[in-house]
Length: 468
Image (cartoon, rainbow, N blue to C red; front, top):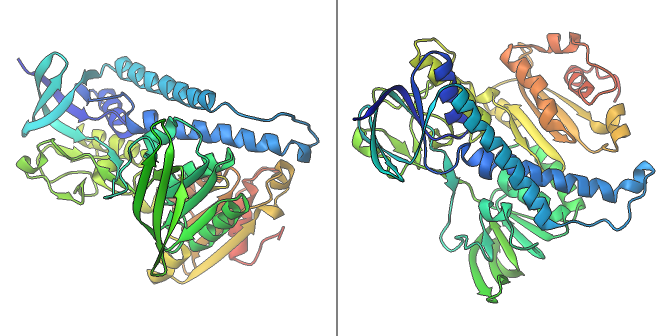
């Protein structure tokens, strides 16, 4: 006999498990179906373990700067296996926490592969065989995976995807990273800091292409200063692999720039050329759900157009961010429970990249704001003007604000420098509260903190900056 639920969530990544828990809090009978790991990609193979790796690289980098702080540190080195082991331990701990939270909230967990057999009906292939589940509402939270381009497919030996890079079989000597989005540049930053001779190839005209052009340029300047080689408006056309049979070898990359193709030799390649949604084998086409370039098409409330079927997170399209998925999960659970939640506003979702230096942003870039017809006031405040930044030994960076000159609305904020992934939330809250420059100017920021730069960057837009 089929198990029956009010809501079934397929996938247990941040969007999935948050949706399931919120539904249970609202009194719904909820099940969560997961085919692989509780916590999904984010906790197991994405956000969390990469940040653990990057923290190790950050500490390693600071150890080499000990003399600047009046300290001494001799014989500095690292154990790559131990660095990876710590990262995996952090991921395991948090994934275990997801299981605890689901159990605590009385969410039924079914481990298996789900297929939508008919509206409201799910067939689950488990270790014990097929199981039937029915639900009034079904939420797809199946996530996404790395995109593979012909000829650049990862093999886990010479060419890696993010999973291979998270558990590297060796330390790269000469590394090529294809793609300079958040995933690519974070891995480039990690391995470069540990000593790999790192080259980044980006098909667009600048690294971190979704960021404000000024911020991208400053980040690039720091990457190059750290020894990275950056090739922009470049394409890797082909990889010639020559494994040595011992887990290593050489890769010859054919890189096209300016209409000319040159070859370079590397021992490791990381392919980070985007993601594709996990939409296969779910039975979506049969139900009439629309799919556009591997992502399920939804409205602002994550409804697919098929009665009772919703899609959240990466499978529902950009921005591909865990925090976006989580908030969509809450919104959908509240909608299913009969509430009236506000839809998610994509332009108020912050983006963070945890490279060195960090990059963070929310809202419109200066270029996009002007293209949208806004008359803008732009503020800038450099880290060199902030006492806390200098005390930390982190004087390189910039906070940039974009305001509507007519209304004072904060249209966007863009940052590069130490801890900006934490600082960005000040402006995110401001946008959610529909704050204008007046409220930000009147807010008292504690001293000495990096957050004072949020104040100064606002003042700067109106010609009132004090410390620069």
